[in-house]
Structure formats: C-alpha cells, structure tokens
Image 1: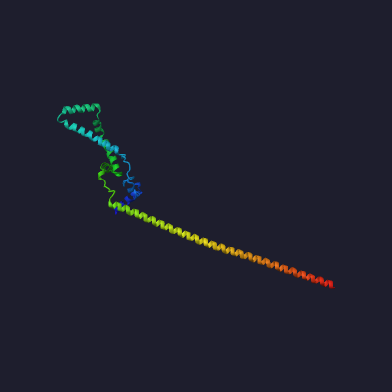
Image 2: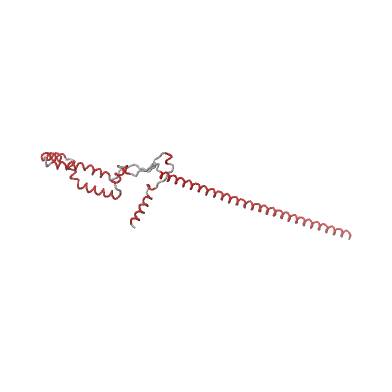
Length: 233
C-alpha cells in the first residue's frame, strides 16, 4: 500500500508544519473579520526566480535574432549590415548565442532542483489567478451550522467542566468537614482523658494525705498512751 503510506506521511508532514496548527475562532463573524484572516502569508519569490526571469528575458532576444536571420533571405545586404554592426559593437544577442549552452545547462539543473522541492509554475499560477481558488461563502448555511455546533460543543464542555469543578469542590468541602469533625471529636476525647487523669491524680493525692493524717493521729495517740502509762508507774 504505497499510496496509503504516502497519504499518512503527507498527513504527518502537515501536522508537523506550522501551517497545520490552525485554531478555530467561533467569534470571527461577530467581529466582521474574513474567515481567512491571519492565514494568508506575505507573498515571496522563490530563490530560483532569477533563473526563470533570465529565461523569460532571453526569449525576446532569441526571437529577435531568429527574425533577423529569417529576414536575411529576402534582404541579404541588410542582414549582413546588421550582423556586422552587432558583432562589432558586442551586441547582446551575440553574447547570448555564445552563452546559451552553459546557461541552458544551469537553468535546467536549477529548474529540476526547484521541481523536486516545489513546483514554481503552480505557485505562480495560483498567485496570478486567484479566481481559480474555491470560493468560500461566509454566510453559507453549512458554515453557520458548523460554527453553531462548535460553539454549542464548547459551551457543553465548559458546563461539564464547571459541573465537575463544583462536584470536586463539594467533595473537598465534605472531606474537610469530616476531617474537622474527627479532629474535634479526638480533641474532646483528649480533654476528657486529661480531666479524668487530673481527677485521678487529685483523688490519689487526697487519699495519700488522708492516710498520712490518720497515721500521724495514730502515732500521736500511741505516744499519749505511753506517756500516761509512764505517769502511772
């Protein structure tokens, strides 16, 4: 399938070229701009246009020399005078005849190189006859329908993006609320635990003080009994 491969290679080349990066602006009709605004590049001559111009300029000179040689049959004296005057003054047709083989070779090579890269005749014909380009109706129903579909599709995509963003924000807000609730619950439990721990410590200290107080009272009573016993003895 060489044609299929060539087609894919052409599409890939168009995709990689800067001319393939076309952006659609659905609001061009509202601004009153033409549909091809921004797509037309300034015209520039090919680097091989000099060779083509030389060839076009050489054609009238060759034609004049050919007419002079053909009219020499009817008036040989006049043709000989013209030839001698032109050869004595170093005229352009004489030089052109001398340089024709080398210029022809160079021009053929340049034209063949240009034909391999791009066809200049097609470019010249395209620029010289703009009427041959396909006419585009700016107000055609198909174009307006396509633009409307693109605008509707863009609006639908924008609405979908807004809805997805809203759902994501709601989900994030819900998640933040759940995390805050869990954090507040944990803080409440921690405060209750610390309060309980403080109560336990206070109760243990109170029990220890009561026990020490009872022990000290018992020791005092024991000392009093010993003193009474000594006094009796």
